[in-house]
Structures are given as C-alpha cells and as structure tokens.
Length: 574
Picture 1: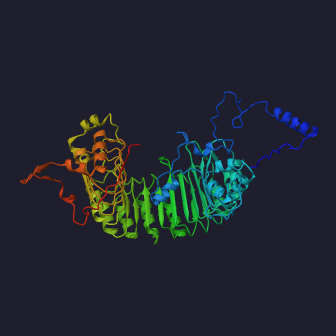
Picture 2: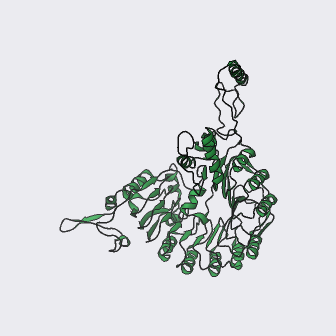
Picture 3: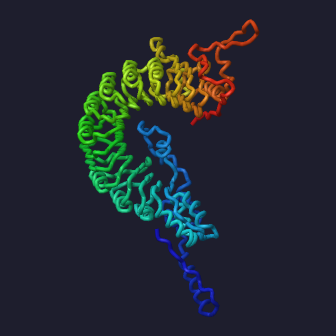
C-alpha cells in the first residue's frame, strides 16, 4: 500500500510564504467538491456505509466486526484435528500478524515519545487492518510497521466481499518472509489469487483458504496442480469450496498435509507426493457424485506410502473402498476416518482390523456397523485406540457403547451422537412435538427409545451424546471427563441422571428440557445435589443411607478424603 505524504507549509515569514499557504488552501478546497464515500461512491451526507473495510483496507473495523449471519464459514469437523490447538486455529481466529522472532529495537524513540521496543511490542499485537492504519500516524510508526511486516512469518487475513486481489497483493508484498498464510475469503477465489500468492510468498510452507457461504472458489484442478508444483517449499495445503476442480494431478516432494473439501464428481485424481502423511478429502453430499473412490485409493497406495492420517467423507463410501484401503497396507497408518459410508458394515470393520492393528483414532460415523463391529474393534485395538467416533450409526445400541468404554482402557474421546435415537425422528426433535411423537411410538420399538447408558472410565476426557433422543438414563463415573455434550437428549429423565465427574468443565445442553437442565446444573456445580437423586432410607442410628447403583460406589482409590475440590462447570445452551 502506498502512503501519500503531504508536506507541511513553510514556517518562515514573508509574502511568498503567505501566498503559498493561500494557494495550498485554495487547492485543497477545490478537491473537496463531491463529498463521495471512498468505499462505495455514494454521497457522504446522510450516508451510512455498510462496506466496512471493503475498499479501504486501513479501516480498523474490518478486524473487529463480526461477520454477518449470511457469511458463515463451514469449518467442517475433521477427526484428524480434534486436538484443542488445531481446533482453535481452524475455528476462524481473528486477523493476526504473527512475528516469531523478536527484533532488537534498541532504546531509541519510535514515535510519540514511546521507546522503540515498547512500540514494537504494541504493534506486533495489532491485526493487519489496524497495523495498516497505524503506519499512517507518523514516520516512526510507519518504520516500525515496515519492520514488523518484514519480520512476519504467519498471517491470518479476512478478505471482504468487495475487496480486489490487489488488496491481498498489497498486504502480502509487505511480508517477504511469510511462511504461514491463512485467508478467510468472502469474495471470489480464482487463479489470479493463486498467482498473487505464489509471486508474493516465495517461502510459503503452509497455506489455508477457508470460504464463506457467499464466496465462490473458481480454481480448477489444472491451476491447483501448477500452483503445488511451483511451490517447492509447500508442506501443508488446506482449501475449502473445491467444487470446480473437476480433476487434478498433484506432484510435490515437500507436501505432507492435504485438505480439500466440497469436492464433487472428480474425473481424475492422481497423487505423486511421496512425503504425504495426512490427507483429508471431503466430498459433497449430493447423490449424483460420480467420483470413483476405489481408483483413488489404489492411486494413493502406489505413490503415497507414508500416509499416517486418512480422512474421507463421501456418500459413495462402500465396502469395496474399504477393501481397497485394506489392500493398500499403509504401514504407518494411525488415524482412519471414513464418514457417511452407509454401505460400510461389520465386514468392513473386519477388513480394517486385519490390516491396521495400531490405529489410535477410528471414525466410522454414518456407517451401518452394529454392536458386533464394536466387539471386533475392542478385540483388535485395546492397547492403542484413544479416540472412537461412531456418530449417526443407527445399528449401535447403548450396550455396544457401554461395552466399548469397558474394553478400551486408553479411550479419551468418544462421539456417539445420533446413535441412540428415536427411530421415528429424522433429527433432533423440537420441544413442541416431543409429546405427540412419544404417543405414536409402537410398543415393539419401546426398547429402542428407553435405553440407559452406564459408563465408568478412568481416562475418558470428552464424551458426545448429541441427539441421543432414545437415551432415558445416564450414569457417568469418569473422574477425568471435562467435556460432555448432551444437546437434544430430549428423553433423558432428570431423576435417572447421575454425573460423578469432578473435573467437568463444560456441559452442552441445548434443546434439552428445562427440568433436565436444572438437574445438570445442580449436579455439576453442587456435589450435594447428587445425594437426592435416588431413594434412601433411615438406619437404626438415624443416619441416612443413599442407595445408588453398585457400579458407582466410590472405591478407596477413586477419591482422597479432604483433598477433592470441585471446580466450577460451564453449562452451554447455545
């Protein structure tokens, strides 16, 4: 971005100086004629511009204002990055310029009477738009901003809907040493944007492009292939909205992480990436998707032998694809995620278990596996599996989930959302039709609705039961559990809920009945509230004994008397 420098009028006296000042005032007066808005071109009088930072990148509101509801980012959940640090990065963090190495600023003044070192520390925490505005304050601030731009190694930038590619180019040209780039696009993404990134960031290693709902990604497969081939330092590529690729051939000796989402009907897919370790391919949910996933897996088996993490989400996932994956025999595979494959059955689980016995994460959400498949999982992965995700698996019962938690001692995360659900409801029911739906359920399906879940686990940290409308009773004894998701558990009875989780930090209870929310809040934030959940009777000495299920009886090693301190838990209703 170019900054206009307006010289100050001469300070000396004399008629010539007065004439120069008058002439300057006259010229300035002529330039103020139209009063048009510099962003949208409309007259300023009585005008409130809605394009915050669209055409004026220096507007600080571009970094602080929240995006409008129509500009929601997809941020598809990937089981490969369930760690807290990765989720925080991929959840749409604010704009930021990250400077890893602190520059020696010395003790000289940096403008406004501030020491240069203090000004450096203040400006390095500003978002890009605010830093562009700060550079126009004075010469000292402009010089500090220039040094910060040149020292930046990571940039996270939001590109407004009406911004041109020149805006991105003007910012990227200030950062010749940029290594990590994350763009949140609200405008069009095309080959010109890729060319701008390739030219401005010669040392780029990590690139992520996320798209808003209104954004359009026009990048084709050939353009993406040329970009990857030219960027020989590129190690990680993550891109959303890839519906126009059509097909691609990726050749790179440095690429180790590849995430592509919104793929649709790819005619060809070729990977020549010998160092690729993590791949995530998320396809569109349309039934007319014609991508041949079996051929794709065969291609990966020939050229990407170092794969450790595989994530594929597609409605075309089938048992034949799983067989091709099992035949590939990726020796280093540790995380496998196959989503939305309704044709994946217990036979597919047997094929996975026979080829990959060291999995640490297994995600088969949306499949048709049953409790028998869970039994095979428990027999093969008791010493390695720490994360198991089985959401939207209608053939799994509460007994299978309970068996998995009992047989997998290293389990830290489990997702069973929409698994124990009402067979008559297609999704999480609303509060208005809960009563009428319960009356229409036949007696033969009562056992599918009124199910209880008993979990006692010493290492489980995250448990998700969202949409489990068939769950009637829940008993948890998990001392390490810190996150519990009970969203839309509409049939869960408050008197059949017992939470013995002293480290619980957050409970999600959106869509639950008010009486259930009250019971959750009383138990998680008041240890004595658990006492009144079960019938009790008086003993001969007048004391009170509470009868609780035998499996929840505290063991001597479970609690240390006088040392337990219950922390405050957050109840989330959004």
